Image (tube, rainbow, N blue to C red):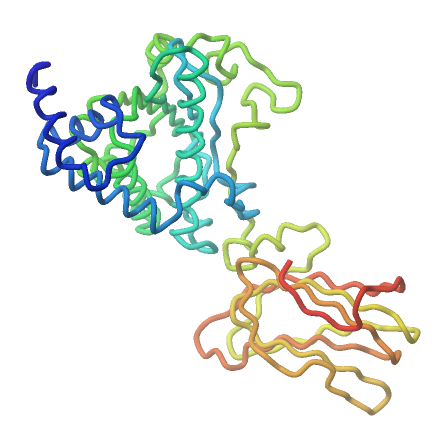
Length: 386
């Protein structure tokens, strides 16, 4: 283990090496984090910090908190939340990871979207640490993580997408938030957890791994209470807080996770969980029509659609006449619903056509909400993202 003299010498060398990219945030304590993450190897610490600066600039991380928009699926199904502080003032991140349907989320959202949400949460914690430092008049630069693995299933272990995603998070944390972990407590781990851990452990540094404690069902509470007063914890995790809305798990702050509905995980998107939506599976090589009756001239037709690569067209049928209202086109709105509205000058049957006949191999999940209104709207026709 390095002594104070070695740390001071390495710190001075790193300061000299960073003169060309010097920033106000480069305090001694900040730079020591990067040095310790690389065992006081100045060249490696310099390289790690420069890569972090590039990553933050390329991804505009400094303004992420202000501009981040959480996808509805992430907001509803991603488990966890930042909850209070430990005995020294460090923020606590509680993640009921066993209740997260990561396989389902990765089937309808990209890995990058899910990674960026975690970056957003890490940036929130960083700001919390800075606020706590000012409030308490001392440096707060570490956080406590509580991972509850209750309900974690083999379905997640045997999903390469899930393993790859968690490995990506571990690498991101090690490379961009080094030495910010005070304690990582993994509790309620299942009997097969060692299999999963073997896939993740090689991506952790020895310093990070040394701060992680792993427990099955019993024995973990004393370790947690050593760091956190019960008054700061939900009752579910050994504390005294039972919220009138969030209950013993404080789900008003700590997302409970949960399995995604099949319609969502198969590609129906967030619209699939709308109680007004119709969700269906459009088989490969097939198409379907949804007729909507418009009784009077001047009615307004509104729709919201969500699907991944499906043909869409709109026709008006009156007697034997079939008039094309919207030309056929492919829609790819699996992330955000496509919203449209139309002024119907003529009554009749307006038929929405959804086409997957071009796909030889893949069926598509489709969700839609279609309504007929009689109040006026701003423009006669408009198709937008909502």
